[in-house]
Length: 360
Ligand SMILES: *[C@@H]1O[C@H](CO)[C@@H](O)[C@H](O)[C@H]1NC(C)=O
Ligand SMILES: *[C@@H]1O[C@H](CO)[C@@H](O)[C@H](O)[C@H]1NC(C)=O
Image 1 (cartoon, rainbow, N blue to C red):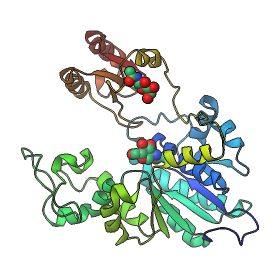
Image 2: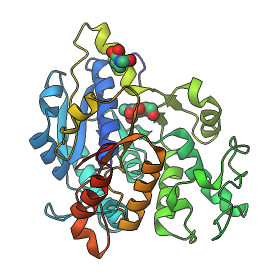
Image 3: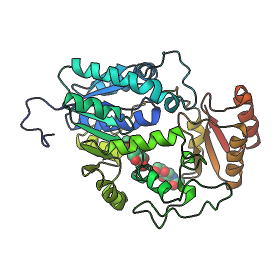
Image 4: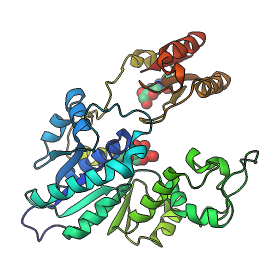
């Protein structure tokens, strides 16, 4: 890409394409705002369903209307609109339905969009974007929304297995060091690995998919990570041995605020990009708590949990003696008593109502 853009008659047109999940939309919409502030023309590509929800529940469309050339476009995620999309639906349906459908639709859209797209910033997890971009001769940058450390561990997963350091056996010491990830030899412990890497079965299709997509994203023209050299320098150097053009653009939220301030705009132009209706009833409760006294507990948009595990988490919170704010999403609990989510949570919270608050 032309770095200063001065030789171009029109601003570069960038297509930003997140995975259709809340956490990825959060990060990629912020990156889009950062680029819009730098006068890029942005097309933000969302799934039909998520776009519909955002339009209904948030002020996002109005917020971005102030950036010239900022557009939302939609694509199907391959599932019918009324599919319940509960639990880990994305990973479970990815290979079979979501990837081929999105790939076909992305290609079609890129062929018809005007002005043509100069560069795609694809979610680092969506490897098929690379294939489509290559075929159409469009440069592609991957934005990996997770931390560089996480990224590097996923990348190194096959090496950890080759070194015989995984899988973790049943009764093992979770403090055991994993020494086969370059740059992390002295501090990465079994307990630091995400739960799916701790699975006894290393042939698990979800692990395979995460590793495959992580490896693939280093073949992009560049990789964007939400961090700084100061924070993650040593790991960024490791990642650069696989993908030389790594841009540490973070912290993205602070970058946006600095630029907005420089433009003498209000700092308070926060917009919501929540896919669920926000439960703001906790605000007055939080206002009554001392600064830095509340533990925030949330499990993201796809994790589900059994009743027993939730009770364990609750014991941990009780033993911490701290106040806590717990988010229990609809469809969060699994098992036959999944229907009784509310009862279980209400029962637990009743016992700690002086210290904890739940939002849904
Ligand atoms: C960037 O990383 C920081 C620190 O982890 C996090 O608080 C922030 O939400 C992230 N921002 C984006 C846009 O991903
Ligand atoms: C709590 O934090 C807010 C915001 O940073 C600050 O204005 C306020 O003075 C703090 N209150 C106390 C008691 O420290």
